[in-house]
Image (cartoon, helix red, strand yellow):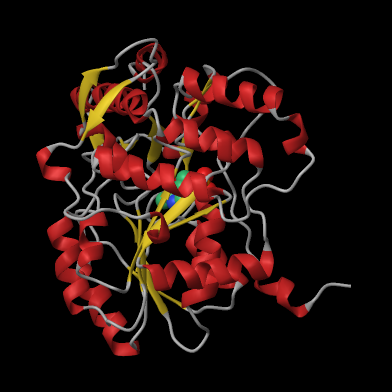
Amino acid sequence: MLSSRMSNLHPYVPGEQPKDRIYIKLNANENPYPPSPKVIKAVRAAAKAHPEKMALYPDPDSNELKEAIADMLNKSGGVLCRANLEKGKKNGSGAIVSPSEFDKIPFVVTPDMIYAGNGSDEVLSFVFYAFFDSDRKLVMPEHTYSFYPVYGGFYDIPLEKIPLKADWTLDTEKMLEAANKENSGIIFANPNAPTSLGLTRDQVRKMLEKAPKDRVFVVDEAYVDFGGESCIPLLAEFQNLVIVRTTSKSLCGAGQRLGYLVANKELVEAVTTVKNSLNHFPIDFLAQTAGIAACRDAGYYAKCAQSVAFERDEFIDFLREKGWFVLDSQTNFIFCKKDGVNGQEAYRRIKKEGILVRRFDTPGIEEYLRITVGTHEQMQALRDVMEEI
Ligand SMILES: *Cc1c(COP(=O)(O)O)cnc(C)c1O
């Protein structure tokens, strides 16, 4: 009964969401903080004032949302944990936000440079469909977001996986070599997962200068708000650059399923064509409402990102003092292992105490734990457990 295509599918396995007991969930890189009170207010008000909108199709192109995203990027610079905060005027949950000098975008991001979709996973899927083909290998790091290979299988796109360097950073030279050999596209997360390390904007610029100009180059900035360097400023120089971002991590919105990409207008149009051929209304009315309100309260999320970054650095210090090997992190998670401690065993002991972290069976990273940074209280609970390991 199955199509022949089915044999190419190797579905992604997300961080577990068990229901048997209440765990402290540090395994899916979700944000530990709730969305801005303004988001909750906006969703309530929208459902109450316009119940008929639940019966009608939403705006298929999410135009108001794209305006709000563009506006947020222009005002924040696109890296919330470095954004400057001024106290908000009245009854605000957040604050007025402005970019740090370093993160200022040297042009105005316009809504026609944005495509918004049902989670960045869907956006990525449309990107794979629109820009990559079965006639050449798409280049990616060996260890990166594990959904990319899933889409490779789904769309029958062969992959060239380039091992990371010994220090866990991307081997940009080898990646470029491979891309130029086949004249193919490149995709990676920056900062990368599960390693938590990022390339600087200058390093990405140097890659773009040497990469094939007629192939799309995708940078997934899911974690950039926690301390990476955004490549949005590079859009002024490179027409083949696509930047994918999500509200799931830094905008406390994993439950609403909202992701987007920023690119030049022709590439946005191509992805829109895919969308209109597959899922005409990817973002429901309530998610659009929530997303718009979230983007308008970037100050609130900047405070959340700054808290996460603070807790992260404290926790890294703690782990290192306890003899763990921990990579520096520019994300909302920590990648770590301890000599003499079996990864599976450490994971089990932490789970037994009611805390979920993530580990992988992937060769090369089996001994590592990936720990999402939670609130101060959650990290204190984890300290108490890890103290003993
Ligand atoms: C979480 C994550 C995504 C998916 O985000 P959604 O918007 O929730 O689909 C994409 N890329 C990377 C690297 C991620 O970590």
